[in-house]
Image (tube, rainbow, N blue to C red):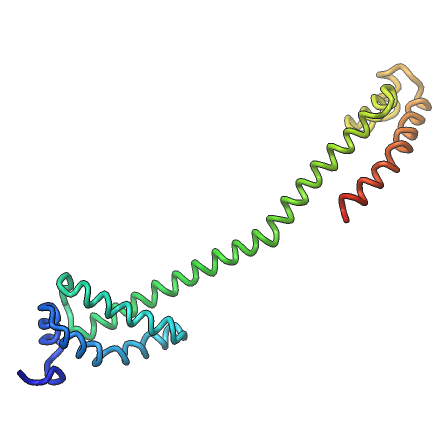
Length: 189
């Protein structure tokens, strides 16, 4: 039998389908370099191009009995490389997107969560300090700050003078400010 180098692609492929290892070696020798160049021009990464070509030939050997050529062997191999390159580019873009999303979450998500937790804790501590105020002072303060009522509305609702309302709010602020200043320093260090 003549050397494998003189056989056509169709003949080599027929031998390959019949488990001829030397035919596979000849196809590999004939096309691997050209296919590598073709892949490298598209992805610009030597290792990925080399891996892609090795994977292509591994699949060619393992699925040799399942492959049906509808075109020339060279067209089949170039199309297979092109499809693998497109899959790799799509995979790399998806991977980059996931990495960017994860980085964004790490950079922003953690801060948002941390800020939210601190804000809830601070709100609870402020409410606790307000609850510690004397009953009448707490009632006037809550009507003013929580329900946003005017001094006149509070004085009418509680049947006390506006001056008393103003004094109760000022006294509540005098009690709360020093405690809240300490809390704010603690929470935002």
